[in-house]
Image (cartoon, rainbow, N blue to C red; front, side):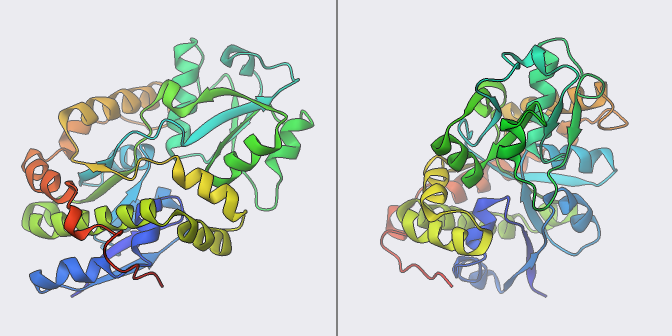
Amino acid sequence: MAITLGVHASNPSLYYLSRLDYLDEELAPLGETGEFHRYTDGTRTGELLAEGVIDFGGTGSTPPVTAQAAGHDLVYAAVSAPRPDHGALLVSADGPVKSVADLKGGTVVLAIGSWQTHLLAKALHAEGLSYATDVTAVRPAAGQDQARRLRGGEIAGWIAQGAELAAARRGGGFRELVRTGDVITDRSVFFTRRGFAVDRPEVVAAIVTALRRADDWVAAHLPEAAAIAAADLGGSAEDWRTALAGLPWRLEPATAGFVAEQQEAADIFHRVGFVDRRVVVADAHLPALEAPVAAAAAADPTATAATAGTGAV
């Protein structure tokens, strides 16, 4: 049976891995093959793991917390290095919002359930405000121009990332009220079912190696990677290259330090009612995975994308 990885556009490492040959190459010595299940909403990753649709997935910091709150028995496999410039909470440069406290009573557009919820909830919490009661958090609707809405005063704030953030920075007219690195580490987070992690740690390590190789490929081929994203997801290749160049493209094991980061987020989510029960993040930490994942994530100059073929499709 093939090992199935979940892929959605919000996780760049998995997105590019699905367009390269590395997964099958790393799984072949273990007698396995790989395939990809594509979906659009990364917040469904825990559900898809629990249902057995996928064996391994990746998101930002929030979805694994909400998956644990829903009772899914997951295990953290690996994390990216911090992404301090991945996103930002934007406000109008000439508008009334000058501080996080000024968001009170306003509407903020964000990808609810993603790492963006973590960012906004923690930023508000630091000012004594509540994500649940002091702002109106809304999802971006298809076809809406959030930049125009923010300039026109229709919304108080907008959390942007990737090429959209690069375009907003290039176009001007906004102020970055909060940058991700000011508030959270904002890592990509990779996780799997407990049974899969316990029974097949060598497969988990092979997947991490494949992800590391995909990250190496992107870092060495930014123009090509940007062109792929622009053609597939929209936006300009220039803005995608800017966004991709700002990511660390480096993986790490999920350590006790990371667990502490996630626990802080989980506690805030419970306090404001975003999750309905307290989550113990350590329950999803498998220390036995740390050594094989660290080895898999270690750079190997003999197998970097700069020396291997692109393999892109």
